Image: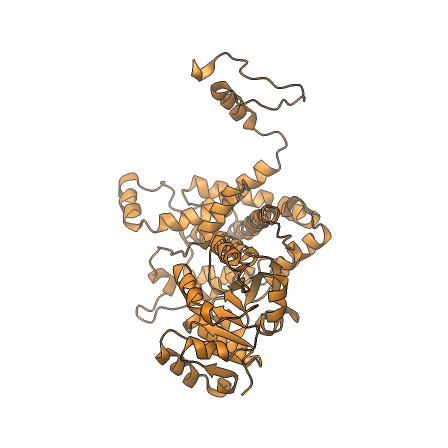
Length: 476
């Protein structure tokens, strides 16, 4: 029997779907699960794809079934379980075999694992996989970090299973060690911001304009035919149209307003802070999810503090205001992407990855959660200006920021006056206003720092700086 081209450990939902995708694309795959019963069940359910699958009951049998150098995908819960699985595998592996973590790993764990193996003869790939269960089964966006040689070994298989955008595969090698998982982390951070801004617009339509879920869904459906065309806008329309099989009304009205999170959005915000790169949209989205979990506290606070006494948002022209909402959401998306790509640019320098920004935008155009026509424009912008300091100063996006500026201001202002929370949209406005202002207000902060700590400062006129012109300050 011919050996498998690749192996996969972990036959949960994501692992099973990825294995079936690999088999369906003509690649023979060996599979192993901690419980033999699950391996047998998976094999029996594979139907016509059984001929491409080699089910294995032991690690030794599994490793022997794969053609060297052996690429082995580990698709289990991120964290300590991955380290444990790697230790179980190591005694059976040979030089140049590759262990691949395809879970939602912290890129720092990926870098640690990569370094731990570099003198062992084995190597490691950190592989970001976006698209959820559906993407894993039919074509995800794949972000690879590892040695170029290890990438070449898996390139054919990963290209075959990736999503395609106009026949372009949505997979790429992005650099060594943690590059792939870092890019996936930032992808998820942008996803958090995008979802939060959609929720804020939904809140304005629901609580400000008192529109029904069905009516709001129709608005999102129209937007999905224009500049906001994307997977998240598409599924928002579908979610709002869905009916509750029990109560009969809109399903969304029966869902508790508490959003969960798995940690990648938080990691994005932390790494942005570590590198001193503002990612306020991502930070606002993470904070909003956290505050959503305080359901009982929010209900108690509403009884104590009340809501602003403006029951309906007053607008002179409802259709024009809804058009403003569309433009404001586009502006917010621009801010979130600009911040995410700025964080990746800083990380690229910090870790010597040389991340290819146009390529990243290209492989996000299909398969992943944040896929949208918008990414074509980002690809073009970074292709024309690969060294641009920020997405919003590239010609095309500078024009978009200017075109949506007034609408974003009107929406944020109206929401604030009516007590409708829009933390992510407001953060986008603050980001644009801060980034575009050549003379800011940090001079007073620096003066205060110098006053109580002799930190020194740079002079606007370029003259020699000195400390403490105001006496001994707070140290007196």
